[in-house]
Length: 248
Image 1 (cartoon, rainbow, N blue to C red):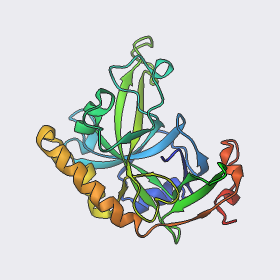
Image 2: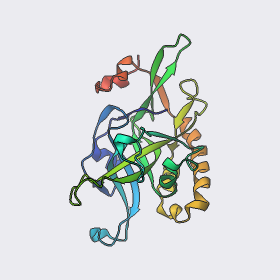
Image 3: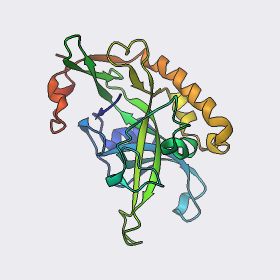
Protein backbone atom coordinates (compact mmCIF):
# COMPACT_ATOMS: atom_id res chain seq x y z
CA UNK A 1 0.00 0.00 0.00
CA UNK A 2 3.10 2.20 -0.17
CA UNK A 3 4.07 2.91 3.40
CA UNK A 4 7.82 3.48 3.07
CA UNK A 5 9.78 5.20 0.32
CA UNK A 6 13.37 5.64 -0.81
CA UNK A 7 14.94 8.74 -2.37
CA UNK A 8 18.54 7.89 -3.24
CA UNK A 9 19.13 11.07 -5.24
CA UNK A 10 20.23 14.50 -4.05
CA UNK A 11 17.95 17.52 -4.37
CA UNK A 12 20.19 18.80 -7.15
CA UNK A 13 19.69 15.57 -9.06
CA UNK A 14 15.91 15.77 -8.57
CA UNK A 15 15.97 19.31 -9.96
CA UNK A 16 17.74 18.06 -13.09
CA UNK A 17 15.78 14.84 -13.57
CA UNK A 18 12.35 16.44 -13.16
CA UNK A 19 13.04 19.86 -14.71
CA UNK A 20 12.33 21.73 -11.48
CA UNK A 21 12.22 25.54 -11.73
CA UNK A 22 11.98 26.42 -8.03
CA UNK A 23 12.96 24.62 -4.83
CA UNK A 24 10.64 25.89 -2.09
CA UNK A 25 11.88 25.54 1.48
CA UNK A 26 14.20 23.01 3.06
CA UNK A 27 13.94 19.54 1.50
CA UNK A 28 14.33 16.18 3.29
CA UNK A 29 17.03 15.01 0.88
CA UNK A 30 18.32 11.44 0.58
CA UNK A 31 16.44 8.86 2.63
CA UNK A 32 16.38 5.07 2.51
CA UNK A 33 13.37 4.52 4.76
CA UNK A 34 10.88 7.39 4.83
CA UNK A 35 7.53 6.65 6.53
CA UNK A 36 4.23 8.54 6.49
CA UNK A 37 3.83 11.53 8.84
CA UNK A 38 7.36 12.76 8.02
CA UNK A 39 8.25 15.38 5.37
CA UNK A 40 8.83 14.32 1.77
CA UNK A 41 9.54 16.20 -1.44
CA UNK A 42 6.63 16.68 -3.85
CA UNK A 43 6.39 18.28 -7.29
CA UNK A 44 3.69 20.80 -8.20
CA UNK A 45 3.09 22.71 -11.45
CA UNK A 46 1.47 26.08 -10.79
CA UNK A 47 1.02 29.51 -12.33
CA UNK A 48 2.54 32.10 -10.02
CA UNK A 49 0.31 34.88 -8.69
CA UNK A 50 0.90 38.58 -9.31
CA UNK A 51 2.59 39.07 -5.93
CA UNK A 52 5.05 36.20 -6.44
CA UNK A 53 7.98 38.03 -7.94
CA UNK A 54 9.56 38.31 -11.34
CA UNK A 55 7.99 35.11 -12.68
CA UNK A 56 4.41 36.15 -11.85
CA UNK A 57 1.95 34.74 -14.36
CA UNK A 58 4.36 32.02 -15.49
CA UNK A 59 3.87 28.28 -15.16
CA UNK A 60 6.58 27.00 -12.81
CA UNK A 61 7.46 23.48 -11.72
CA UNK A 62 8.18 23.58 -8.01
CA UNK A 63 9.66 21.18 -5.49
CA UNK A 64 8.03 21.52 -2.07
CA UNK A 65 8.53 19.78 1.25
CA UNK A 66 5.22 18.39 2.53
CA UNK A 67 3.95 16.14 5.30
CA UNK A 68 3.16 12.67 3.97
CA UNK A 69 -0.37 12.15 5.20
CA UNK A 70 -3.11 14.46 3.93
CA UNK A 71 -4.58 17.00 6.36
CA UNK A 72 -7.70 18.42 4.65
CA UNK A 73 -8.16 22.16 4.92
CA UNK A 74 -11.46 21.76 6.79
CA UNK A 75 -10.05 19.29 9.34
CA UNK A 76 -9.07 19.91 12.95
CA UNK A 77 -5.40 19.43 12.19
CA UNK A 78 -2.81 16.65 12.36
CA UNK A 79 -3.38 15.87 16.03
CA UNK A 80 -7.05 15.04 15.38
CA UNK A 81 -6.93 13.59 11.86
CA UNK A 82 -6.27 9.95 10.92
CA UNK A 83 -3.15 9.28 8.87
CA UNK A 84 -4.29 9.52 5.24
CA UNK A 85 -1.06 8.61 3.47
CA UNK A 86 -2.84 6.70 0.68
CA UNK A 87 -6.07 7.33 -1.23
CA UNK A 88 -7.81 4.72 -3.37
CA UNK A 89 -8.21 5.98 -6.91
CA UNK A 90 -11.48 4.06 -7.28
CA UNK A 91 -13.22 6.08 -4.54
CA UNK A 92 -11.14 9.24 -4.16
CA UNK A 93 -13.79 11.44 -5.78
CA UNK A 94 -16.48 10.19 -3.42
CA UNK A 95 -14.54 10.66 -0.17
CA UNK A 96 -15.01 14.08 1.50
CA UNK A 97 -11.47 13.82 2.90
CA UNK A 98 -9.96 13.74 -0.59
CA UNK A 99 -12.51 15.32 -2.93
CA UNK A 100 -11.32 18.93 -2.86
CA UNK A 101 -7.68 17.93 -3.31
CA UNK A 102 -8.26 15.51 -6.18
CA UNK A 103 -10.38 18.06 -8.01
CA UNK A 104 -7.96 20.96 -7.68
CA UNK A 105 -4.55 20.08 -6.24
CA UNK A 106 -2.39 17.43 -7.90
CA UNK A 107 1.21 16.60 -7.07
CA UNK A 108 3.87 13.99 -7.74
CA UNK A 109 6.09 12.25 -5.21
CA UNK A 110 9.48 11.50 -6.82
CA UNK A 111 11.06 8.36 -5.38
CA UNK A 112 13.81 5.91 -6.25
CA UNK A 113 11.51 3.17 -5.03
CA UNK A 114 9.29 1.99 -2.22
CA UNK A 115 8.97 -0.98 0.12
CA UNK A 116 6.07 -3.39 0.23
CA UNK A 117 5.51 -6.38 2.50
CA UNK A 118 4.44 -9.74 1.12
CA UNK A 119 2.53 -11.96 3.53
CA UNK A 120 3.76 -15.54 3.29
CA UNK A 121 1.70 -18.69 3.82
CA UNK A 122 3.02 -19.02 7.37
CA UNK A 123 1.90 -15.47 8.17
CA UNK A 124 5.39 -13.97 8.21
CA UNK A 125 6.12 -10.83 6.18
CA UNK A 126 8.84 -10.46 3.56
CA UNK A 127 9.72 -6.88 2.56
CA UNK A 128 10.41 -6.13 -1.11
CA UNK A 129 12.08 -3.10 -2.66
CA UNK A 130 10.15 -1.98 -5.75
CA UNK A 131 12.04 0.47 -7.93
CA UNK A 132 12.64 1.96 -11.38
CA UNK A 133 15.88 0.04 -11.91
CA UNK A 134 19.17 1.36 -13.28
CA UNK A 135 19.17 4.16 -10.70
CA UNK A 136 16.02 5.62 -12.25
CA UNK A 137 13.15 7.39 -10.51
CA UNK A 138 9.46 6.64 -10.11
CA UNK A 139 6.80 9.37 -10.16
CA UNK A 140 3.91 8.59 -7.80
CA UNK A 141 0.62 10.42 -8.38
CA UNK A 142 -0.56 12.38 -5.37
CA UNK A 143 -2.98 15.01 -4.12
CA UNK A 144 -2.21 17.80 -1.69
CA UNK A 145 -3.85 20.40 0.53
CA UNK A 146 -2.99 23.30 2.82
CA UNK A 147 -4.20 23.39 6.43
CA UNK A 148 -4.26 26.62 8.43
CA UNK A 149 -3.34 26.50 12.12
CA UNK A 150 -5.36 29.49 13.31
CA UNK A 151 -3.81 29.26 16.79
CA UNK A 152 -0.52 30.61 15.39
CA UNK A 153 0.27 34.24 14.66
CA UNK A 154 -0.22 35.54 11.10
CA UNK A 155 3.52 36.08 10.67
CA UNK A 156 4.44 32.55 11.81
CA UNK A 157 5.81 30.67 8.76
CA UNK A 158 4.63 27.36 10.24
CA UNK A 159 1.03 28.57 10.31
CA UNK A 160 0.32 26.81 7.02
CA UNK A 161 0.89 23.05 6.76
CA UNK A 162 1.30 21.46 3.34
CA UNK A 163 0.43 17.77 3.23
CA UNK A 164 -0.31 15.10 0.64
CA UNK A 165 -1.48 11.55 -0.03
CA UNK A 166 -0.49 9.02 -2.69
CA UNK A 167 -3.10 7.52 -5.02
CA UNK A 168 -3.25 3.71 -5.17
CA UNK A 169 -4.99 1.11 -7.32
CA UNK A 170 -5.46 -2.64 -7.58
CA UNK A 171 -2.03 -4.12 -8.10
CA UNK A 172 -0.71 -4.55 -11.63
CA UNK A 173 -0.04 -8.16 -12.59
CA UNK A 174 3.74 -8.11 -11.93
CA UNK A 175 3.25 -6.65 -8.44
CA UNK A 176 0.14 -8.58 -7.37
CA UNK A 177 2.10 -11.47 -5.80
CA UNK A 178 3.67 -8.97 -3.39
CA UNK A 179 0.64 -6.88 -2.40
CA UNK A 180 -2.93 -6.36 -3.58
CA UNK A 181 -2.42 -2.60 -4.14
CA UNK A 182 0.26 -0.42 -5.68
CA UNK A 183 0.77 3.35 -6.07
CA UNK A 184 -0.25 5.07 -9.28
CA UNK A 185 3.01 5.08 -11.25
CA UNK A 186 3.20 7.88 -13.79
CA UNK A 187 4.97 7.89 -17.14
CA UNK A 188 6.53 11.13 -18.39
CA UNK A 189 3.41 11.91 -20.41
CA UNK A 190 0.90 11.01 -17.71
CA UNK A 191 2.91 13.00 -15.16
CA UNK A 192 2.62 16.07 -17.37
CA UNK A 193 -1.13 15.52 -17.72
CA UNK A 194 -1.60 14.97 -13.99
CA UNK A 195 0.26 18.15 -13.05
CA UNK A 196 -1.10 20.40 -15.83
CA UNK A 197 -3.16 23.23 -14.25
CA UNK A 198 -5.24 23.45 -17.45
CA UNK A 199 -6.73 20.06 -16.58
CA UNK A 200 -8.09 21.54 -13.34
CA UNK A 201 -10.08 24.38 -14.92
CA UNK A 202 -13.24 22.26 -15.21
CA UNK A 203 -12.55 19.52 -12.65
CA UNK A 204 -16.11 18.25 -12.29
CA UNK A 205 -16.07 17.19 -15.95
CA UNK A 206 -12.44 16.20 -16.45
CA UNK A 207 -11.13 14.63 -13.25
CA UNK A 208 -12.69 11.18 -13.64
CA UNK A 209 -11.36 10.83 -17.18
CA UNK A 210 -7.91 11.88 -15.99
CA UNK A 211 -8.02 9.36 -13.14
CA UNK A 212 -8.98 6.62 -15.58
CA UNK A 213 -6.10 7.60 -17.86
CA UNK A 214 -3.39 7.56 -15.21
CA UNK A 215 -4.67 4.29 -13.74
CA UNK A 216 -4.39 2.61 -17.13
CA UNK A 217 -0.93 4.00 -17.83
CA UNK A 218 0.22 3.02 -14.34
CA UNK A 219 -0.01 -0.65 -15.29
CA UNK A 220 2.27 -0.01 -18.26
CA UNK A 221 4.86 1.62 -16.00
CA UNK A 222 4.49 -1.21 -13.48
CA UNK A 223 5.41 -3.71 -16.20
CA UNK A 224 8.88 -2.13 -16.32
CA UNK A 225 9.71 -1.88 -12.61
CA UNK A 226 12.20 -4.08 -10.82
CA UNK A 227 11.81 -5.62 -7.38
CA UNK A 228 13.60 -7.96 -5.02
CA UNK A 229 13.43 -9.13 -1.41
CA UNK A 230 15.29 -7.09 1.20
CA UNK A 231 16.12 -7.54 4.86
CA UNK A 232 13.63 -7.16 7.68
CA UNK A 233 15.68 -4.25 9.06
CA UNK A 234 13.58 -1.95 6.88
CA UNK A 235 10.74 -2.54 9.31
CA UNK A 236 12.39 -0.15 11.77
CA UNK A 237 12.08 3.44 10.53
CA UNK A 238 15.20 4.41 12.48
CA UNK A 239 17.28 2.32 10.08
CA UNK A 240 18.48 4.54 7.22
CA UNK A 241 21.44 2.72 5.64
CA UNK A 242 21.74 2.29 1.88
CA UNK A 243 22.16 -1.42 2.64
CA UNK A 244 18.38 -1.57 3.21
CA UNK A 245 17.75 -1.72 -0.54
CA UNK A 246 20.23 -4.52 -1.20
CA UNK A 247 18.97 -7.87 -2.50
CA UNK A 248 19.08 -10.69 0.05
